[in-house]
Length: 546
View (tube, rainbow, N blue to C red):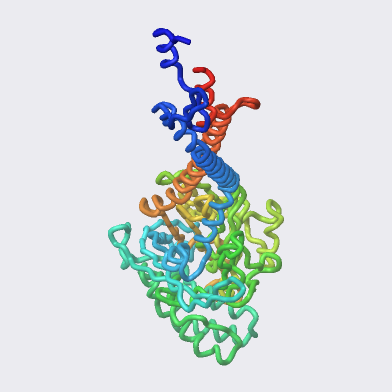
């Protein structure tokens, strides 16, 4: 058979059949046929495909896991954010030797001032001879800086601390409206104290007492300087005599001079021994358990004798709009001050707790006050301090007898009560319980009344006569306020934002992982479709070209 030229060309162009990589023509092996470049690349690529797919799947699973874990942590952080913040705050406030709250409590870094105002009786002779109404002149303020330092501290196993306190005062002439050598005329307190001490003695002792009073020329009113009446004290013949006869009769003389704050400056014993809760249970932080080793005071009847509330410097956090309660060693009782209103200071929001007329109200108005009477209830607005002051007829009120019975206020001339100037208030940051500002104001009054046992008091008019009043002021500083702004505002905001960001990041990672998984699955061969491999591709090409 003769083959034409055109037939030969067609046969030359037709690809040879391929079997196992060997070219076969008419049953004869003629050597290997090279695979073209595209086919070679496809074969190599398809050999790498399973490993790449496995790596991609591992990446997707890792992304999903990371997203899920981050989301769970973020959601938990959002849900538990407040509890976490509270736990951190409580730990910082708890009183321990190395806690943040300890440094603040131990030395009180905020400035404390005490302002004294004296009532000068301008018509003392007329009061004695003509029973005139006392005319009063307010002198002061005499301003002192006040420092507190805790000493003799013992940390107890029951989460309390026992300590004593040293208070020191330093006169500030530039802040004062008077001088320490100002003369002030007021009632003779040692005379009233002595008269109270002899009331239960026999007739002979009372006669001796009157003879002694006459011999030393004791007067109903005395004139002393401001510094003598405050911290220095002054000698009095009645005190000297009492120091002698105290061994003959059963009386206690707690001082050798008289001054309202005599022997207190720098003393570590005057304020007594405190036992206070350290706040391991945060709702008990600052709570006073014992004062002078007892949880009761002998100054009042039960239940008014209970020592309740704070020691006056620490208050538990997360305050409510109800009241604050603290124990005052100066007046031997606990004071409950009700919530008044919201306030703000240096960017910090706070709660103001302010005293009202119910604190020293008569039992007819406030039945809870019946046990403060000490046998005879004073008029409204006065607290009977007789047993707190060694039997001296002393009565505490707010300055200018704010909230007092108008009849009592009318016994003197010169007092002008003003709720803004003469009330008692304390401002607390409610989240931490830290004081922002304090205005603690009290007035000491003496009861001058007829006493048949004492010649000088035999024919006097009864009058509640104010002696002095004082104002303790405490104000936080801008620097300290900034620290608490960080604690109560910045930290919670950062923690909340961080929790939300973490949850959002976890959600984003989880969503990205899910999207990648869906895309990867959409690119895989469908059921019944032959996977793309080197052999299948080559075979397909061979069949087609044949």
